[in-house]
Image 1 (spheres, one colour):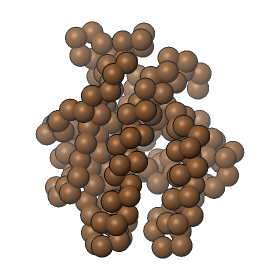
Image 2 (tube, helix red, strand yellow):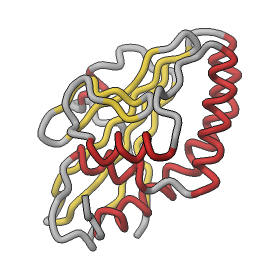
Image 3 (cartoon, helix red, strand yellow):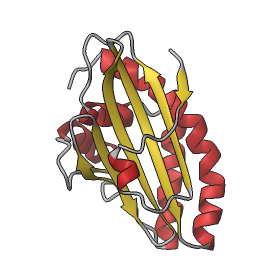
Image 4 (tube, rainbow, N blue to C red):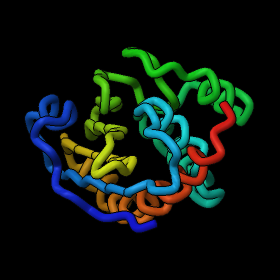
Length: 180
């Protein structure tokens, strides 16, 4: 399974709803091992179920630091609360997992994101058939507001790029074994 970086599609919800963009990326994986095309909401659930242990620790550290800086953080803090949110996620507009609130959706895309004082981010979960092969994309856009946002994203960007590719591969395995 190979993850490739592709161009941001101008027809996607994430592009249409991100008028200003300081950073964007789109990672794609052809999920030949999947028997059927997953819905975008299932991709989001699989995304959150596929975090490597070190990544989870980094997210918890991020939450701790963000809280002290007055940035938005996840409201559910225990492992049990987080698992319950993920397991009960329906993918409706207004639903959220951690700070990833569903902003919009259509048949192939679930657009999530959050606006904060330092930066705004959006992450779309996209799934479609391409040449009879389930294809999954994760598209990210970021709009930086101030110096804190620049500093924050300076550190987050390489971690984001490194882990998105690994999480996507794990997502496909999670979707193969879908049991929720």
